[in-house]
Length: 179
Length: 429
Image (cartoon, chains in turn green, purple):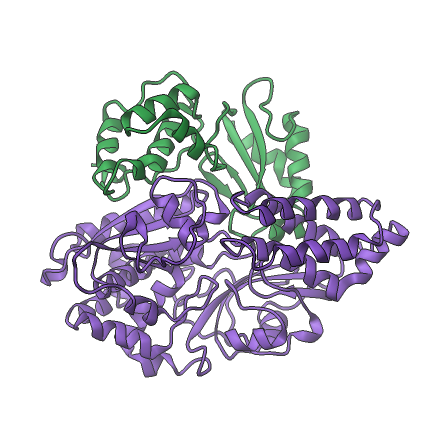
């Protein structure tokens, strides 16, 4: 049994991956099993909302209105309630994102040490603007704060991988490494 | 070995195994004396465990410094309704990254503290609310939780004691305010992480309406050491009011940024200039924020104090979360403050008007000053908005957002005036 199937951590898996399939069925097979495990860990269904949204994003890459309706149905909530919660949290993508979601930390620790230059370099090389997805669907660059590794500026997270100590001159090699 | 740097003047209790790959897994942790404190605790009466933590004087390491043992003693003992423990691993205060390293290098130290606390407060289910951004840390923590289940440190009848505990890892999804304890509880319940009005306090009505203790990762990680070695042993460090050791996350313009663990009577100036090596070559420090971006900035002349809660307070700031942010003379103070305020503006949950509106206005005014389009009356305007944001809201985010603005105007007004009067900046590039 893989760790992810353990009931204690079934709902705590990183939810951004390179493989994104917006049409994948929700919560079938192993995902159904994880869904059931998650429900056993809370005294009510509502509390499973964040872990279940994370899992939906892990499967489909983003949280579409259809996804929210389905999650609402499964947890006995209304779609409007699910939307109100999903839209509160920055990690839930309410629009499709590129294959690589590049999060550049611009928190005070990174900002003091040149994070702006790193973000600009990403935008320049991916030919995008903040929050937009590149024409080839590969990259979405967003500014976030704070990724919580302030001693290692600039911190960059690509999907579920964290890079520490990124300088503007490292960005080109980092992007090459992704492909 | 500390991480990423170590210094002989540290007092390493929590961080003793930072950087040691072999300490992460359960076998390595057991070889290093892991879970001995749990064994001891399970042989004690619950109230005796609470008493030793009370006697140790351990104070909450999340920022507020509330005595941990006292917090535990507020939990009902009658068992009429279930009690919960929520470990606050949301570490969202900008400049703070100590809990991350605790979980990354010594996840079992944290889990052992959680089990002991749960036992003492009579909880049968504990949650670790960890921020969703910590993807790599979540993996480490998850593995450790599974290991703890496999070895019988979690689950039914832990170590044959008859005490049963489940632990669930719950990931947040990107919300600073989920680090506030009642915001955390709402988030855990599948709601927007909007803070709740207190009272009732979490020990009365917390998670799912039940009595709940919310403790920071570092607080809980300190517990096994205290239970194993006693309150007097723990008090060998620090001051009467601030016993023990604490991790300081040091970032910004420093030669050796990183986590340093020092006794709580350690000198703040020594921490900055000796342990962290001071600013980079050829630079001078302008100011230091000692406890995360929510506490007042200190000038270099104000650093000669000890790092205890009361020491930093006497110097004019707060220990907060122990996230130390150093700014050298290349820093544009207006820009740095604008950056911090924009963060709060983005993270304001929007429940309270002074915060929702105030943070946005502060950011707007700071942006125009930074661009050289400020007016002299913007200074009193910023202070006025700041005064109207403090102490008027459900949670302290509003106060926090005003703090860098007010303290930087008090101490670095010339930077603002240079932008306003001359459209220039005093930062040395």
